Length: 171
Image 1: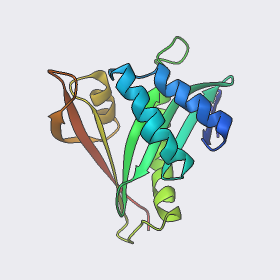
Image 2: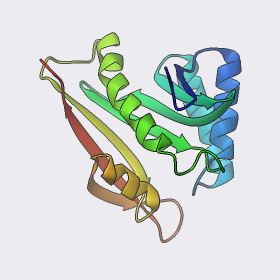
Image 3: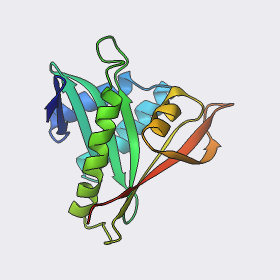
Image 4: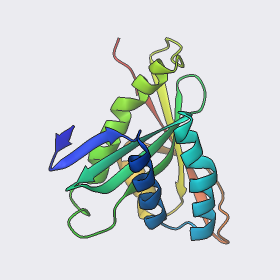
């Protein structure tokens, strides 16, 4: 899909996976870079290769500018494991995060259906964790997610906001 000069696609090939891993390392946000690299290399990327997680990516002029990694976490439940927008001039402040989230909301029910994980209730729950009291939490709130709890973050003095949003599927 193209919009605003962006190209959206599922990450499937080896070169795309390599670019995704590099992008995720470069945009580690508030995470400890070493722990984040271990998670990328030891958990996230192997799960994408085995089709246990689905990676979505957005490119502009051949460069990845955003990604989302989705994990089925039960019937009708998708966990957003990684949602990043490049923090660089020409990308920030253009509504890319909102555009990406709209695509995630559209793709989530299809992923559940493809994997046989829709139960017919017509509801899909998306959940995520993000660092509490940061612009990221405000972004997700603006996208319709509610904070349903907090838990300690491995960074001393910080907490993760546990957030979710329920979608009502059209009949």
